[in-house]
Image (cartoon, rainbow, N blue to C red; front, side, top):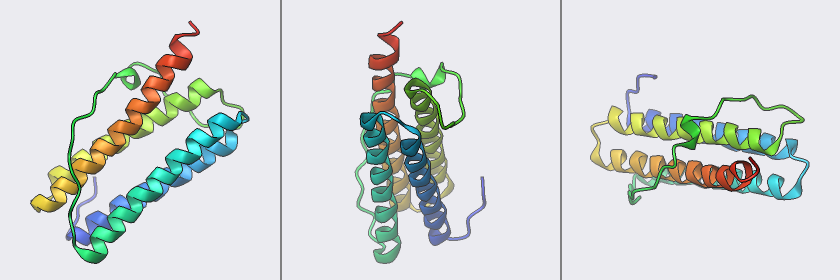
Length: 151
């Protein structure tokens, strides 16, 4: 992981990561032929835009006001094989890709929280980690409902 010299550098890095997530989900939505799947991934892109906006507000105003909560983990992402985004990918493969991405985002925010001694910023990154774990859980539930029920 990068070395950060200021709170602003950490926030800039996190905002860049959120923008990458926006781009990822937008791209994934474009690959989905099914309108419902397309809408699902566009919704996640919008949520990532919201995360980025919160980080920008924190940077601009210096207000660290995010709550931290616990989220259940089905751990499905730990047991599915990673796949790459393709134009003709199936929904289950897109779900696997999304689960893996959210798990990585959770780990990133957890590491960012550990990388700063600023207690308020730690709380922000812990809250963002929770948001990413909620996304992962939603994908795991969808995977369980959609893929596991088919088998």
